[in-house]
Image 1 (cartoon, rainbow, N blue to C red):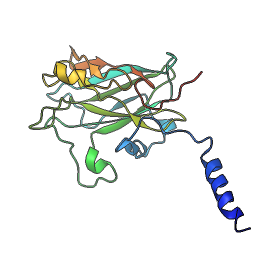
Image 2 (image 1 turned 120 degrees about the vertical axis):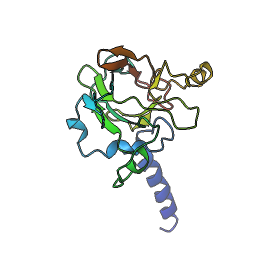
Image 3 (image 1 turned 90 degrees about the horizontal axis):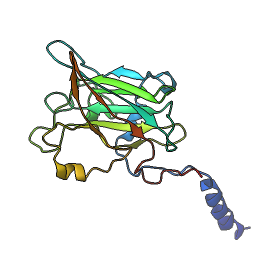
Length: 208
């Protein structure tokens, strides 16, 4: 019986891991923040205004797009978690933050693609980090049904002088290009970015 115990343990270890979904996307610090919203995923809207959106002497920015599956069809029910700096280039906090909000600040939001795979959010345009040469950006984490959360390329802006050709060449294009062309439309700015699930994402499942 003693000789059977190690064998049974080994068999148990093998069968426990069999059939488990492989984690995709590689390491993703802070991606678990996508679960910190008090609104359940199935109740998320396809459009959200992030905090501090205002037309009072300012021009907000609206970004929309379509999320596509790997087969090219629109992807409904995909959750996007977004956060960004303020107009001073910092992640502002109110002092009562919990979890990842202690680092991400309160300029964050969640949207879920509609049945056509479309999403939209509004925000004030973020500024780059003070004293650094990193382009201004909006972080984004993706959560597909039945696949773990992972990050894709940040939203960056084509007219940003910090987005040099050298920096563009280093972009991973996870989920497709994150470079957004911003145009002025009336009392706000608008841009568009389509997202391609699985594109340049490590260990992404391939359906045959």
